[in-house]
Length: 188
Image (cartoon, one colour):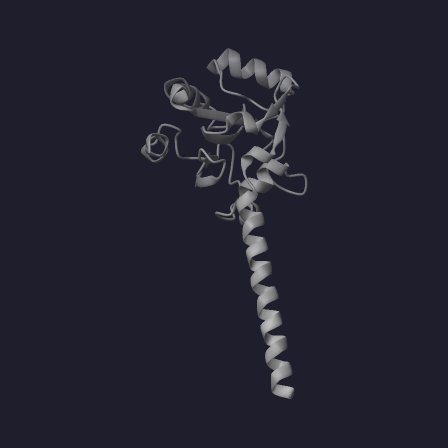
């Protein structure tokens, strides 16, 4: 009798454990970039659901960084591939060496004047620390993105999102936007 009770409890526990695993798996599968709405540099709502079916490169930017000239390559990449369903979304952040001290208005002016940026630029956010924006929590936590944990190393780190809104790759800040690894991903 004791063995039957132990067997029954074991089966019940195993069944609940498997059900919880399935539930966790489904919760992870449901999370995509499409769950987010943010503010752009002019204060208008930007809804990621409008990008369904497109490849997205999310990049944290800064105006006073040694990597700031990447704006030029990001814009060239955007112009070349936007007709092939690519969108680049920039998120200014002041997390690294205070290299993005400007207001949203100043950032917009800088991007337009110096680099002719036409890809969507969002309001300044935090990409690390206790005040990390929810978009970056999704991008950096495997429990939310289903791919991998990562840390934003510096300005101009790139997150590649597939047409289903899922994180596919994390690209180091030093890798230029026109690098073969990114261009091949866009064309793949």
